[in-house]
Length: 182
Image (tube, rainbow, N blue to C red):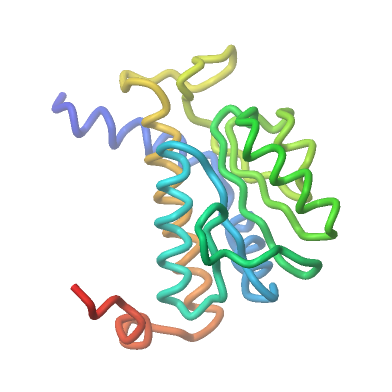
């Protein structure tokens, strides 16, 4: 079996366990939100930033936590918090703070019992391997949290596709918001 086939098989195994109605629920929540904020660290943070970028292309009012131009979060906003383990301190702290401010917090994690999940309004469980290889995690031939990050990226693109359909915002509109300074 080719290496890429092994990776695709692992991703397919994870994605097959995620219910489409959960993704629809998140996309609907994002459509109804005032503003969207995304946080994650490391590669999970890159997945979050790519999600925020695509949401921006789809005309969402979206921000990446930690950037210098990110405004304060407020009631009516949604925070998407990404952490494979659900224990990344800065992500957990941000989720707790957002919840205190009456924001809707969506955890994206492998661990639905983690501190991040506890601090969140909703949990999107991604049943993938993390760098910790905790008991009960999906097995992976890949190093560290690669399977989690790959699966999250596809899940986020799935949410974006549902979001764009709900907003009736297609390719041409998204393309008009794509960077033209390159």
